[in-house]
Length: 293
Image (tube, rainbow, N blue to C red):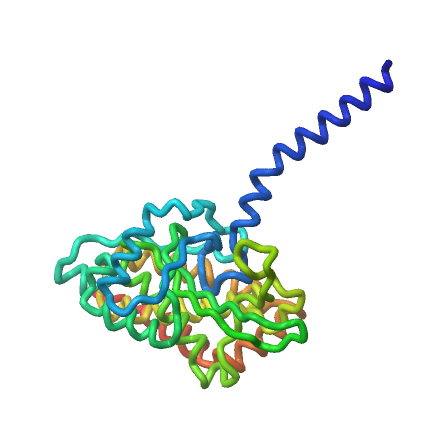
């Protein structure tokens, strides 16, 4: 009798453990990590995807519809080493908010031109509830040959124009042929399959995908550039403090990524692809020592 009760107790424990872990597992399936986004604070990987559209009005309309789209998952990333300040909702258009970039991106006069450029590069506009990001998904065959590359520009409807500019900064980094002569590194390598709702699965060989340490270099470099143009614009003190805090956070990650014996490889990668990083650091130190009035 005691053995029977003990066995029943074990079964109940196992069932409870499965039930408790199921929601977390479901979220994990739906939450993108490093392999899904570049330079992001985390994307759920389950956002609604909208076909590329030919006008800023259409882009804005698609993003507005997406905000309440039932296909969205509200699970947010953040456990992949890419937690940062994140995007914020923009404010009403005024001469000041437009000049500073704090206006809602869809209402900035340069929104049309910038989204048109991105679409001309082959990017799809993707509306997300989580933070914006750039995704470069490479499809490979069984022999590892490249079949195609899908480009996604993931935007949160109504976010600030300056947050859009941050993601444009990542596109400039990754598609700069002086930095990456062989083309932008993928954020994910996948193989086509009929057994997945997405139509693809993660490839076994992820060689060439940015590592967490390389991503720290990429993000820190972008944050330094961002600080300089925000300072030149004379953005409000609270906006500047927000971005200084974010840059400091990424400096800590960058320092860890480039420290110790393991960090030597990351330092070499940084020198090959982001050799201007130290000069940006020097300019930011000068900017911080002599803040604009």
